[in-house]
Length: 527
Image (cartoon, rainbow, N blue to C red; front, side, top):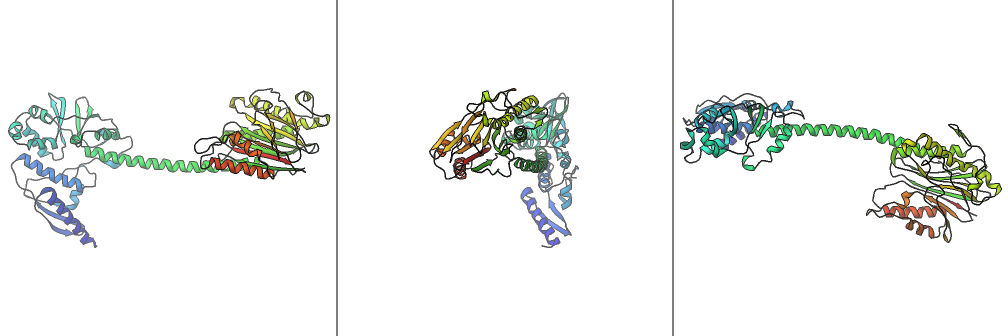
């Protein structure tokens, strides 16, 4: 479609609308470039009410066609023929400048009409006011200068068009007419937020939905506000709110990405804290399973060699989850390693000292005393945490065992952790219950030390409560009973046993969210 034919098409479409709206003869006079001139005829009338209706119809057409926000008035002459250019229809509608609105804008920021008329005035005088001011949506009614109510242009014209209304009300005081046109009046203070006013306005009954609002600017100073302006302003504010929400969402997305990047770094650092390679000990096979619930975890396992060629085995669960637990996980893991290696930290030194340990060991031979010295790391770690981090209320359940490959004995402390199991080909053989409270709860705690023998084919398996308390989609726990039932069945190897538990565990969880870290550590004596 060419530029000229498009203008002609638009001109004919508008002419058609004028015929439908006004019921008058309309035709396109000329089309020049992108501008069109229309000729239409309005019937002459000496009746002020008829003139108001004609002008109202014309203004309705212009309001429908306008998309701009200038504040000026249309020069209306009482001539049978008027000529308007297409551009003038777009620029001569009084509006507020909606582009300047903000989220906190109030009713005083909108274009309002200040027109008051006493109830002692006649209907004819009000009709003349409407005739002279085509854009007035209504009038504020006062009695001796005091606010009494308002009457809308629409309701005034509708009432006056009824049979005998002219004879009854046109030359009579408005006080006679008002009881017949009175409706509930919404009165807002000028500082009322536009969104709030629009919401209340839309809750009115349908028959008064388009009635103008009354805005109180000062004591006995009231103005009228067109509902159309309020709703358009509300739409603009919602647009601004949407843009702000989108901007904040973009900022949150960027912040989340940055946080995820940092957490990913933390996850990688934490993985590096876990043993990259499990020590190779003759006659032993070691398997592990680690599934954090979040990017970083509070669980950890460890396997490391100690002086004397002993093997240290640790499985632990730091209270809470997330970043805080992950930081303390690194601290607990480091302290156990440092103190069990007969080193010193912050004046808390560990030396090869058996004094007092014999009293806390159930059965032990003299040749095993060197083996138990590493277990003092649990007490040193407990004292360090309670002395330096008591205000954080962080603690950890922890199993620390020291295995002697020569004697196949395991000396251990279970500090409030889940019971470990020794499993043979016949099923669960022994349960290693807690020998003291969790680490970091009470200072100067003395932990009981116990000893067990690992026979050929035996498997020692430890786990965290993320295994037994794993939840199915319906909220059902995996439970200790299910775990024990799986341990009772013979396994070809330690790896097969952990894989069996892991498979059943995640089948139970299915698509439910993982609430806690899942960690398992198992050791099998081959012969």
